[in-house]
Image (cartoon, rainbow, N blue to C red; front, side):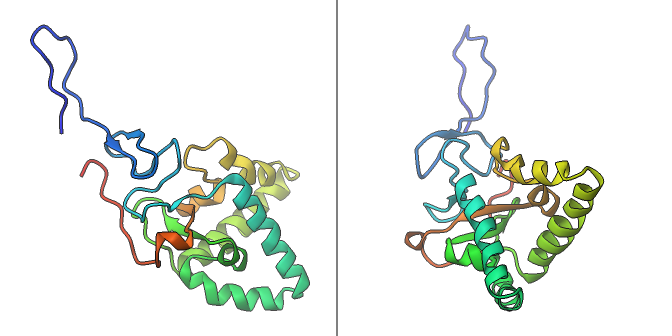
Length: 180
């Protein structure tokens, strides 16, 4: 849809915004999420970007579970749930990791890359080289990022979403291509 211009109107024809299914705010064409409420388009209504508080709780809970199980229980649990785009804490907090472009829930391999290669190895080594500054910056990046991505989400091309029970079962959703 294109907004029509009237005779004598200096406005150039421009695409109309679509409405967010959750809050009704306008979303420009080619954007796959609502920057007002965090609803990820083409995913079920109510599947929104996970809040920074929920993300922090997930990190703390994953660390606590690893400590309580001496790492072994958390590792086994992680290997099982990574195929569903989750960590043990994400499973408990009803969050999932999805592809930032397609919206599909990521699988085991992508979770491995995101956590082991990008979060632990790349960000960890940068943290050592910068005396921890890169680690802190990498984790708090989501506080000012419109897609609430931290640095290893950006490296992996992923988003973390809250997928409440009311949103229905997880299926392999795909977002529409930008502009189409």
